[in-house]
Amino acid sequence: MLDTPDSAVLDRLASLKTSERMPALFLGHGRPMNALVDNEYRRRCRVLGADFAACPPRPQRTLGTAPI
Image 1 (cartoon, rainbow, N blue to C red):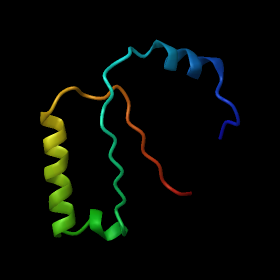
Image 2: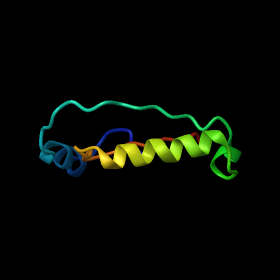
Image 3: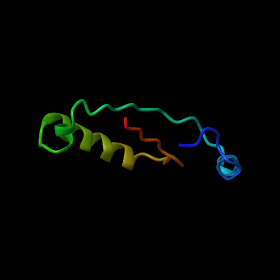
Image 4: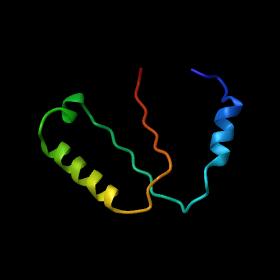
């Protein structure tokens, strides 16, 4: 893990084009089995993903996090 970003990372961030503000969405899976079994939560997440894929503009970057 880096304590401070190196210059290559900062240069890459600076090179991103500006765009309109986009909505933010936080999803918590609740429990790992929700990603593995067919249930209402998983079906609704799939529909949500398809809706986002069909609606431009597309984000330049996404961020995913997980505890270690």
